[in-house]
Image 1 (cartoon, one colour):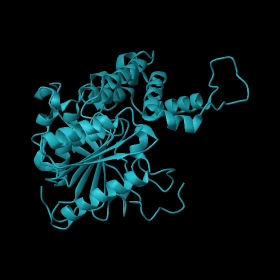
Image 2: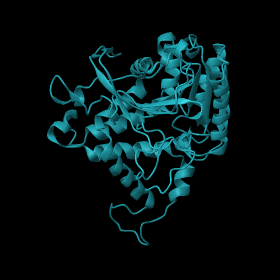
Image 3: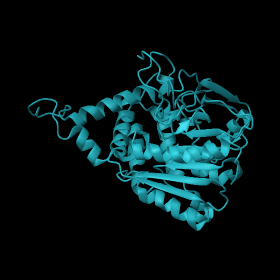
Image 4: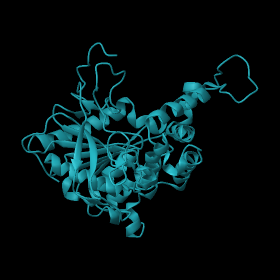
Length: 387
């Protein structure tokens, strides 16, 4: 519980549900006749509508990126360290938009939503989505907000893939793309981790072929295991070793299979907590969207050709111990952008935390992002618009 809201916070915020009655044709060939997106906004849109920044979330993210929903909140939004007055994404200058993607489980239309045709939860019938589908839905949101061109589209991990897709699909509708701890496609190892997580969920006896909500059940064990697998990959060996080492729960071995090491207890807790608030079908959907993303596939595998339509300027940021989305993956994008003769800046951060570093207060990372966004402020908010 808060005593006082910090002065550099966006303060108390309230999410909004935005309804779209225009049908959306999806990459899989199915059509959503209508849908909701849950959105939070921070700051004010200027008269020129030139200062809007879109925040794209990662796999388990959502619309609540900054501020507090209540004075009783224990912690702020998931990227509060970067969004707010005088922070890297400065809400004194920017109008910041954060949403829960289509297919999510935090209010936007997704597998846990009611299908009006059946009166039941969509469940396994909800269409498989792609990053392109998310970007197409976000374009509708931009239109509704009166944003013809984003000052920047910003995202980490899966969010970075969305920022990259924006630059390709709608090159005239963003001036900057900020891509953090991301990749232009998943490695075989990453796809393998996602498949193991999905199999853990689908093997749970409570999964019921994805129709668990109809039976008032949840595949908690499977979803918890999926989260445990994911969580291991988000941390570096150093970070996990520093946090837990081989610390025991008690002085002596139990000679059984209960949690005996601190790291075991931590992973079990994380898995159980996650399974209480995240939808299993959404987890399947999000990981499959990650697997499918590969903008170079339609260009003979040549990423520079896929990026040729882009007009945005780019900032790429990676972290040295991130083995899930390694610096090599970011450098591949940088190389392709250079080959395509695009403007790009690249910052590789020495950080021991692994993939989750993109969410953390690492001074060189935060300062680098802030310096870049200050240039965006000068361009977008002081009448110096250019490509």
